[in-house]
Length: 378
Image (cartoon, rainbow, N blue to C red; front, side):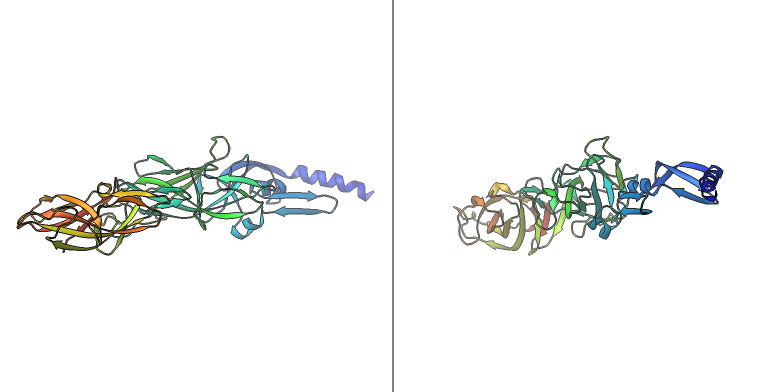
C-alpha cells in the first residue's frame, strides 16, 4: 500500500510548490526556462540551462545520471563559452552565429601606424588614419568540421564621433600571417588577427562583433576605452594623454626606420657636395644637399621605385622651399628607376640645389598619402 502512496505524495508536494518564474537571466539575456520554487529554493531544468550556456546535457532516467559537456576540449581550457549578450569582456569566450556556432574570444587590441600583412594583402594607413589591430581566437564547437574565413563574422569599430568603420574582410593567422580560409576540426582553436581603418585622431570606444546575417544571432559589444594599447612616441600626439591620436607630421630622427606606404625608409645622413650628380653639377655659387636613404620594400609584391615615388621637401631657415632634383644610387650617378622586390633594400641618394647663403633646416619626407616625417638637417 505504501508504494502506491508515494506518487500521490510527490504530486501533492509539486502542487504545493510555486512555479515562481519562467525566465532565467543568462549573461544579461532573459531566456525562457521552467523554474520551480519550493522551500526557498529554485529548481531549473539542467539540460535546458546547459544548452543555453553553449554546452550539451542529457538525462539517463534508467541510470539516474545527468551527462554534461561544456562544448569542446579547447573551450574547457579557455573558459566556458557564453551566449553573446550586450557587453563583451576581453579574454572571455562567447558563442556566436546560431546557424553554425563559432566560439570567439577577443584577447587584445592595439593602435598602430605601421603596415599590416594578411597573406597577399598589405594594409597601410594614410596620414589621416591609424589602424586598430584586433587579436582574437576562434574555435569550432561543433561535432563536425566547419569552414571559416574573414567574412564568417562582421566586425565594426565605432569612433568617438559615433561613425562606424568596417573591418577588413580578411583575417590573418597569428603564426603564419597567411589569410585565414580553412576548415576547422571539432574543438580546433586558432589565433587570429583583424584590422580596422579608423581616424588618426581620438579614441575608438566601441567594437561590435556580429554574424554576417542580421538574424543569425545577437551582437557582441565591447567597450574599448582604456583597453587598446596606445600609440607610442614619436607617432603619438603628445597633446592626447590617451595615446589614441597619431600625428600627421612626425618629428623624426636619422638612422631610425619609419613606415610609409609600401616602403620602410631610414634617413642615414646629410652632406653637401659641389660635385656633379645625375647629369650635371650645381651652378656657380650653389651646392647640393644630399640625403642618403635606405629604402626597403615592406610589401609582399614587387614595387616600382623612382624619384617621383616619394615627395621630399627641404625648407631653409628663412622658410624657402629648395628644389628637389633627383634620386640616384648611393655609389653611382645612375638614376633610380626599377622594380624593388619584396624584402629588397636599396641605398639611394636624393639631392637638392642650395642657393648661395641659404641654410637648409628641415627635410619633410613622405610616400604617396602617408604621414610626413620631418628630419632636422644637421
